[in-house]
Image 1 (cartoon, rainbow, N blue to C red):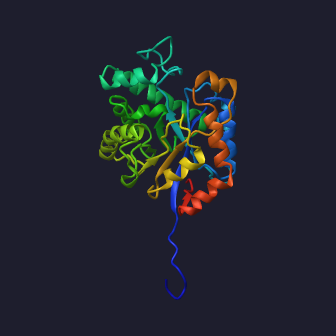
Image 2: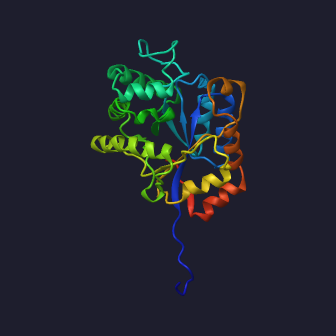
Image 3: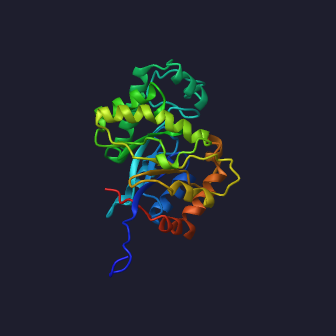
Length: 287
């Protein structure tokens, strides 16, 4: 302490990114509501989602009119039940991408077709630019598909050639936050190593650390989980989240339903802003 009183450290500025904009009207509505309240500063958009209409894209883009409230990214989607935007993509199951576990096995065995991955990812990026009138601020992958072997090479190739000023999401935790008992997060740590190395070689920026992965069936309330994500997260770190309202369309497409409403309620509460303040954290200002 000095004569002027205690020295206060500047807050760490982080990204709080809501995934899956475009999956259903109810999720879209919830994400926009939180952005308007200043409770989110990033969202990633599923161009392969059935509810990324011109109207839904315009409603999101309008939130940045006058002042920039939110970074808008591309949520590259390559797993079921969604369908490719490019013709001739394979392998498919009933006209849709492979389910997550099958896609992972195919990527690990290097049974995917690199050229078709590049074409599909580039097509989704092009669709984003057409819908929003600009390139994405950042890119990531639905169900972390962009971290997989073969996929990450195609993903980074498209970013480097088409959107080199965008940053990409890596999903490795801060060193101080790593717990070996969390197998889901540990797998993301390992998969992110290859993506970070190649992104650095290509001159593509990545977030310095990641948090937000948890067992969606956990009995621990989200209000207790979220402050753990803030611990050790450095300036510029990113927390993934999935707030939303539940409608019939969401139930048809995704198993993550009521937990989205739990996340929405938390981010809409004073508990959320109090947790940020207690940890010396603020949301970054999008450019």
